[in-house]
Length: 275
Image 1 (cartoon, rainbow, N blue to C red):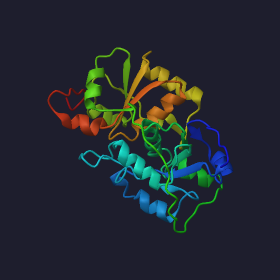
Image 2: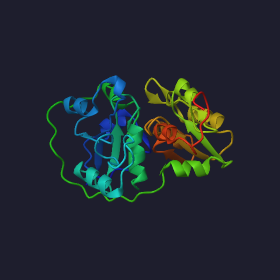
Image 3: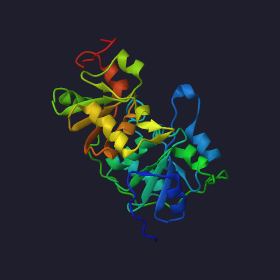
Image 4: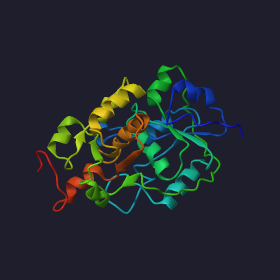
């Protein structure tokens, strides 16, 4: 097996192309689209993908099946078995991407890290950047990979509503809401500051580290602990990726996000037009 060093949490299309044949690399398509888009990530992956990429389905498969909330973080056993079936080993470098720039792949990146796997990166700009760089795609049927040996060990990168409640009064915690301005204005957790995830991107790629530092330093008001939220726990992970690139270390994602919090009712305070 060829040694492959860790390139950091973000890789370019050219870097991925240069290392695509490395047998220590696993590439996964983590595309998920909002229902209004009327697109199916798995069907699109089946018809066209980065060569050798598997499909990481956190919306229908690699999720908590015991809740009505969408694509919630699963238990260790389900996650480990699912990614073993995708051919992932404990020592692999995993690169995740999606077909909508960088909308859904950071969620997969955060899930791997929340299961103890640090050797995972996001493809900057996703499938679009790959194709714009002139790199080939694969369209024929995908062969099932050899089963991997991945072992999961869940940590606390995802938190639940009770954890959020306990942090509302913490003076060193800044809640960042990745939703659009209008959705944020309609209702939010107390003290949450709006930082639409798209503000971290330019032409579908993550902005420079220097620009990300400027954005986050302005948003956090000197606070060191970041709690990222959104509609259903997807684009909050874009904020988590940007925050880490900006140098923040104490970052968590509220898994249920507004889908859960807004439906909780009495005892779960909200601000905005919905209060």
